[in-house]
Length: 302
Ligand SMILES: [Zn+2]
Image (tube, rainbow, N blue to C red):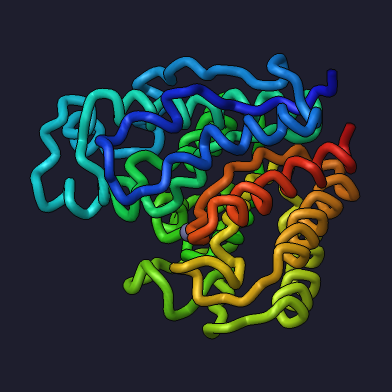
């Protein structure tokens, strides 16, 4: 068995009412596929517990968190999240956050660790939005900083949507550098300012995308010298994605992941990976592209 550690719990896939439009199925299909092809064994998966409230409050406003916890978020704010609030949904969210926190410790030990869910980058200090209630990688970044486990953090957000929540949370924190490469004309329509934003026009194809990434990431790492990296590996950049507006092939999406990991390895920087979005109509496209991220990591690290 390799030391590829992956946060997963059945609750990741099941808290929404029947017929809800948010696609939950991928959360059980990704580990199922990885098990099926023998890339991982059950023992690679770990079921996260829940974080301490204090760990949530290092990132989110007390009153926002209490409204979530007590299911008292005003209807308007609730609608903005895209989810019907329930105790089970909140449990799912906090366990995802804890999965990312635990993943940081595994990443420090083994170089890399995953969360099958997470990448909830639209959640800001005091708001939830776009299927994101709590910002898992922001919570984990503050966990690292407050426990002196990292001193300079880089968040690489390559989901097709801007990491607006992450950008807002760290806007005044010089210890966390936020980098988001995303569709200029995509949600969220009112963007926040990341430390580095690369907004892309609709229809971006493989070559242009990879050129930009290759031009940007190595120098960014050289300049920031992070001692921990978070990677948000959304696969809504695929041409098949119904929300993404980009035109990346499955192969380019895999090459993207490989390039990010190669930079982490070359610079000896641990990386925690959260999955983010993926909305191709054929679930196979989503699952295959997400599984590629694990396949590449397994090949490079273990
Ligand atoms: Zn997305």
